[in-house]
Amino acid sequence: MTSPTLLRVGRTWLPEDRAESQIRSIAFDVPGSGAGAIEVEMTYAAEPGAVLDLGLEGPRGYVGWSGGARSRVVVSEGWATPGYVPQPVEPGMWSVLIGLHRVPASGAAMELTVRAAEPSVVEEHRRISPEEPAPASASARPRAGRERGLPSVDGMQWLAGDFHSHTVHSDGSLPVGGLAALAVSRGLDFLAVTDHNTISHHAQLPSVGGRHGITLVPGQEVTRDVGHANVFGDVGLVDFRSPPETWAAQAESRGGLMSINHPLAGDCAWLLPVDRPQVAEVWHSSWAQVPTWGAPLAWWLQTSATTPIGGSDFHTEGSDGLPGSPTTWVLAEGDDILGAVRAGRTAVSAGVDGPLLLRDGDGVVALGAEGLILTGFGQRRCVLREDRVRVRAWDGPCWLEDGTRAVHALSP
Image 1: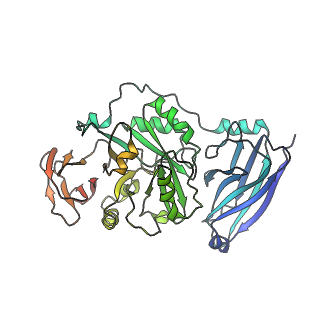
Image 2: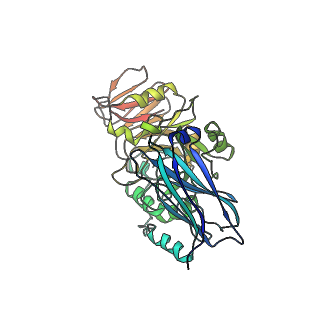
Image 3: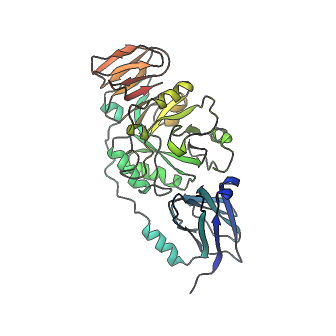
């Protein structure tokens, strides 16, 4: 039996189309009593420089987004392609969302088809989705701070984690469980899972984190061509189509927290006004490609009231950094990761086991720091002669660097 075709359209997108609006919506009708499932297929000519993204909206609102990671997706009540929220395919007007990410001068020729799908099609999609791994034993794993001998402070502990990672729910290669297992193997206590323009992964995080013995922080990378921002917390979707200047307020009003991502980064740098953002990804894994690059510190200087965090931006092995490269340390009460960030109790290091710099009252404690240089904006440079040392320090940002001026750790 041939599944009914609900939409078939071909169009060549031109640079003028992208200039007018980056996100386009193509409507289609699900008639009668609805459908058991729908399958969306979008292909385009592989012209140099052409990149089109894919998403979906239904009568209930936003369904999901796969960006440029997939050309075929399926949605049903029982299961949906990662990146999309499972739901009944109700009758009414639906819309395919097309993101004109890059459109060359010659244009991007697109073919789009939407079909009502049989259960066998849903099962086909489910079979090719990566399987969750069986977790290793999560018992008796010490926290990273305790392993490194970091003292508790007023009952709070230093926890090690990463605030930027991706799974198959956007353009990553691992399912949520696979990412959790990798993060645990890297010695992390927590990991924010921040898939692009979707929260379809949020429902899995508590159970998967519990099975693997790691705190998985709900996140979403709100992604536009003018900049990317991570919203942390189980706060519902912050729609990337809404004005970027409202993202932080939306997050805060729902009990979440927003961070500016990789403010200096190729074609995904932050291109919007910056007025002392509360939190920013000062240390992104791309810094490792040019360790002596001073621009991230210069950007931080201009926003020095900003709480710094770090993110690997992990997608797949061999791309970006592995989870914990860099590592963000938070001084947390229990597992209140976001509360620690709100209070500014963070530090960032190149890795879990590398040199570390932590605030301690009117001073800083440096670990693994023998031979490194302690300095800050406009401050003297002090060579440290012990592996673990506490020194008096100034108010404001400081960091550890080596003789080449490559940064190994920083602290607000």
